[in-house]
Amino acid sequence: MAELYIRVAEDENEEPMEIPSEDDGTVLLSTVAAQFPGACGLRYRSPVSQCMRGVRLVEGILHAPESDWGNLVYVVNYPKDNKRKMDEIDAASAVKIKRGVQKTSDLIVLGLPWKTSEQDLKDYFSTFGEVIMVQVKRDVKTGNSKGFGFVRFTEYETQVKVMSQRHMIDGRWCDCKLPNSKQGPDEPMRSRKVFVGRCTEDMSAEELRQFFMQYGEVTDVFIPKPFRAFAFVTFADDQVAQSLCGEDLIIKGVSVHISNAEPKHNNIHHLFSNFPGRSPSLAAITQLHSAFTVLDGTSDTPDPGLHLNPERSQFSGG
Image (cartoon, rainbow, N blue to C red; front, side, top):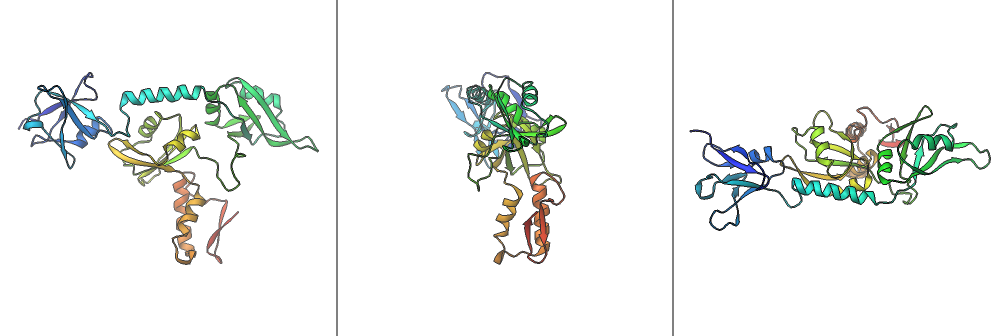
């Protein structure tokens, strides 16, 4: 039997692509999704009524209308929570416009060398954009630098760019972050990293980067090896990261779940609550610690800031 192809397009006005059918004349939804990631069905315009009609889908199999695909052009359906390509572009443009009018905030600069002056700080950050304010925090009595300061920019886009990278200032690596002063002592700083669950092995880091860039600037994508069906994506803007938490998104035809990337100690503390009496064995703790160190994406060796106490069978701060 000669292989039959049907014509499928993302939009009625776009050039269609030929998709192969199965031997029985049906078409697998996975075949469509392979060419149009996120597809959940097909529709077509009836030659008689000129209305759009849906193609019958049963357990991942698309059935030809009236047992014949004909020469019609079939249009891809997407879930409501998965924006179509043009909608994604429009949304991304809208986000950029919105960010353009967002107000900038004072950024804390951590790890400053003792010798760095306010003029040094201004000279360095002026290479990124117009600087409104710089300040090096000093000891009131001695006048010596405390090793950190503040900077503020005119443009929000400049602020986002500065926060997305580390900075070599006077021979030392420094970090720029939003201050945590507005939050309570027990409330962690909002993370720019999200946890992407239910990933499949055919999802590459570059594909994840390209997908999430529609929501905001992506600074890092981490997929652990060996594969564990999850990944971490880090954005330049923590507001973008938090807005995606709790969402189910369609990537390459697969629904993935986005959640907070909690710090290691939060994950371990939560998992310990599942042990009767909260007293896991030393071996179990060691195994958990190793797992969460890899899960966090920072290292595959134990965190030097956490120590095992054999007598108490729990972690203690370093």
